[in-house]
Structures are given as C-alpha cells and as structure tokens.
Image 1 (cartoon, rainbow, N blue to C red):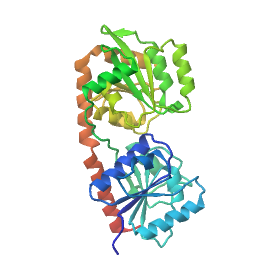
Image 2 (cartoon, rainbow, N blue to C red; image 1 turned 45 degrees about the horizontal axis):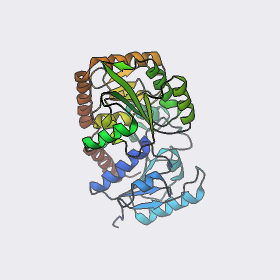
Image 3 (cartoon, helix red, strand yellow; image 1 turned 180 degrees about the horizontal axis):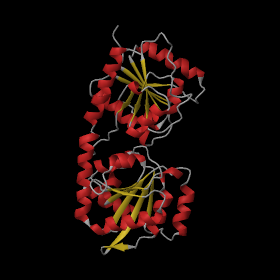
Image 4 (cartoon, one colour; image 1 turned 60 degrees about the vertical axis):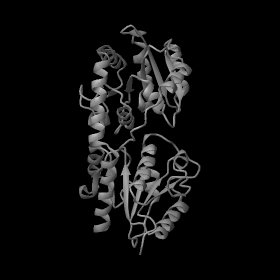
Amino acid sequence: MTSSCQSIHIIGSKQFGGADRFYVRLVRALNASGHRALAVTRPRTPISRALNGIVEKVHIPMRNGWDFLSVFAIRRLVKKKHAPIVQTYMGRATRLTRLPRHSNAIHIARLGGYYKIKGYYEHAHAWIGNTNGVCDYLIRHGLPASRVYKIGNFVEIPPPTPPEELTELRASVGIPGEAIVLFSLARFIHVKGVDDLLAAFALLPSEVLGRPLHLIVAGDGPLRKQLLAQADQLALPYRIHWVGWQDSPSPYYHLADLFVCPSRHETLGNVILEAWAHGLPVIATRTPGALELITEGENGVLLPCNDPPSLAKGLLEVIRAGVSQWQNLAQNGYRTLNANYSESAVVGAYLDLYRELDGRGS
C-alpha cells in the first residue's frame, strides 16, 4: 500500500523557542528533500503559523498529557496516513502518542533535553538525542543503547541584512554608530542566566577601545519585569536595549559584533549555532551543550556559569582583543557549523535512520 506520507511529526508545544524552531526547520527541510513529512501541531500556535502554506498540517488539541481524545486522534491519523515513521518531540506529544501493538509504524521520540523518562518516553521504539550527553542520559535511564541515536541540530544560513536596514535598525534601537554591540537572545527564565549577563554588563566600562559599549537583549518570558527592574537598579537603561521576542532575529544578529550565551544550563544551544550562521563570535558559559559545540579559544570562548564577575572579565578580554580576533572566532565557528551541523548532513542522518528502522521493524 502506498503511503500518503512518509513520516508524521508531532509536537505539542505552544511556544516558539529553540526546540520549536528546530521542529519547523526539520519538517520544512525534510519536505524540501522530497520526503513527505506531515506536521501535527496544536491549533493556533506559532509553530503552526510558521508552517502555513509550506507543508501539510493537521491540528490535534493535545491539551495536556492526559488528553485521551488526542491519543485516539493520533492513532486514527497514523492509521489513515499509513506512515511508517511517527516522530514525536518533547514530553507531551510523546506521552500522547500510544500506537497500538498491531501498528506497523515505528515511533521515534526525539529529545533535546534531559527530560523525565518514566511515564513519557519508554513506550517509543527508538530515541534520538541531539547531543552525546542526552544519548548517554537516555541509556543510563534504561533505554536500550541499540535504539538510541545521536543526530544534532542544524540552523539555516540567513541572507545578509541590507546595510540601509541595519542603519535604520541601529537608529530605531538608539545605538550610536560607533558602538560595540553585544547581543543575547533567550527566554526570560532562570536557567537562561539573563540576570547574570546584566550583572556582568554592569561591571564593564561604558567604553572599550574608545567605543561605547551597548547590549541588545531579545526575548520575553516570566522574568521580564524582574530583569527590567534589575537593569534600572544597575543604572544601565541607556546602554541596554530590550527588543522583545523576535520570530525573525536575523537583523539583530547582523547588527551585533559579539554574541553572548549566559545560560546556567543548555543541552545544546541553538542560539550558538544561529550566531555562527550569522558570522558572529560566541562567548558562552560552560553548559553541557556549549562544551560539546565549542573548542575553547578556537571557535568560541567558554566562561563559568552563574558567575557574573568571571563573565565580565572574560567578556572584557574578548572585546579588548579586537576585531581581528573576533573575526577569527567567527570564521572558525562558521566552519564548525558547516562541518557538523549543516542542513544536508542532519537531514541525511534522519533519512538514513528512517530507512534503517523501517527496514527492520519495531
């Protein structure tokens, strides 16, 4: 029987963070490669809107992890589409995807974090981790090593932002033309360490190399008011620029001179890959993801987590090193991206895995 699609991709998130953006990129790229991938999302979400007019979509409510109506809706969809591969993302979608024993479909759970396994993931047939650390974690929690696979993330290489647009953006944000610009993008939650970045930035001089020093912060989240209050208390309102959540942050990456990832924990760090894709040097804290991506001093700089004085000291050293050193870090980062995290390599790895699993069954 001919399949009406070759894989079904299910995600239950309502956000549009790094993991959600990767889902959109992967589903789009699979279809662009000629593989028919069906997107299953909750209705009226940023993920669904990002896929409008691009790929085939189905909406299933997935209201919570106990939504039994959605369990049966997923089963009906898999049966109707005859897809040999069903891939789920994160806990809610994976928990709700309960294929009957007689189903010929292979359920792959894709994890981009150290999530709770029991009750959410054991029932899948295979598991993908996007880092070595995640794969080791899955095996330590009792999942069979022979069915655990590592496939990393990729980001798209963006087109350049026109110079006139950057000039207008700089003026609209209120950044002097001669300023050195640091950029950070994150959800405003504790683990992302934005408060550490603010505390570190307050320790930096207002000028370095004879140029004013400014910081752009993109993002939003439950800690927004707290972070704005912190910036006011640190007397930094004129050198920190809050630009809100950005569905398309490329112009801000292109406007910046350096990218800072101050997280307290990061499984991989899509923002690091995005910064490299935009030709930026990266300064990151020593999270598990950053340690897998960055070779110290070669394609980035690694600094202690949850330590604003050390972050400030490291930032100042990188800034004072000057443009040639920034360019060297950025070029090496771009090479790392192309060698290990390109779209063709990652999509190829997924397609190879689908063929392997479909060939040997569940």
